[in-house]
Length: 365
Image (cartoon, rainbow, N blue to C red; front, side, top):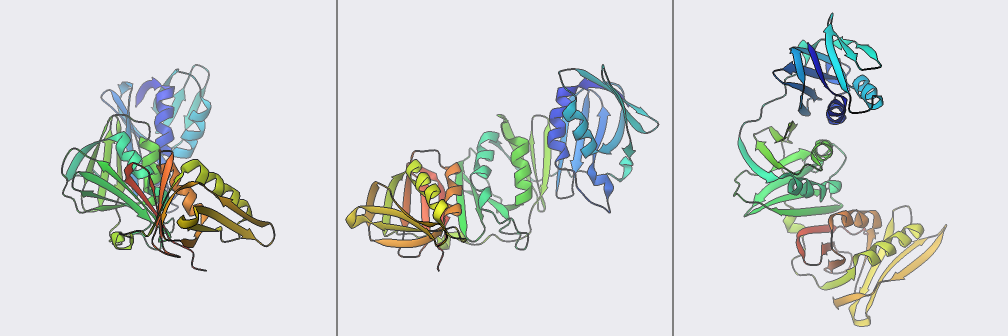
């Protein structure tokens, strides 16, 4: 192997690739990045067996070759090397020689023959604007369980519905649903992408404007755009039938300004107890919407919020942290808040935006 390419292009690719390397004591090769130089490109590959990635960058290739080098060492090295300079790489006695204008570095290699293949996913595929897909995932992923005990809720569930692609996640305490309009009718039955992999998908593809090609098969899903190919394991399981817990006919409705609600929750945070508990009380007949919190060691607080209120009087306890999380998914200035009786789930939506829905379970204590 003997190649030359831009430091900036290598650095940008390594940021995405190195994160996906695995920390596996029995398979140390998973901690490496595989370099494949052929034709006019350098391919950088990494996998932890749950998720795999290949990024292709242009390079001047004098001699083709393959080498595997520890990802953490590469990341540390190229985080220091600066500028839009060219860097030369050459395989010397199986190790990788790195040469810049000021440095000569020899990196020990790992047996690349042991590096697992990154699967080529074949099956139903569709194109979607990358920005839309990432928006769909980002709108809901924070509601997934971070525990792996129940993998079906430690995932983001994606399924087609009419001319929509629906993204859902829940940890059983709250649930987020986002619908994205798509151009083609899809027929796959729904897939579960593990939470950890979803985080990496967002980091790799966020900010890319082009169309994203998504391909599905029984146990894998792949994403490809520009010079990036990423494949993820999918969870073999069934997502809960969540629609049955969504209240159909709310008995209390409120419309308030998002910033007013956020500010009142932040004040309540100061006085909330160890369970992050706040009491939300709505009395439409008295035009009262209040949030109350109490801590025997700190004090207590009641904040009134002005808004358009209708329906029955209602009161319920909630974990304020769960409520705060959803505001990143609501772009408008006003919120619609719906309840269906005391100590029942709360539904939060953006006014005028039917594409996003957030449900928070009450704290029955």
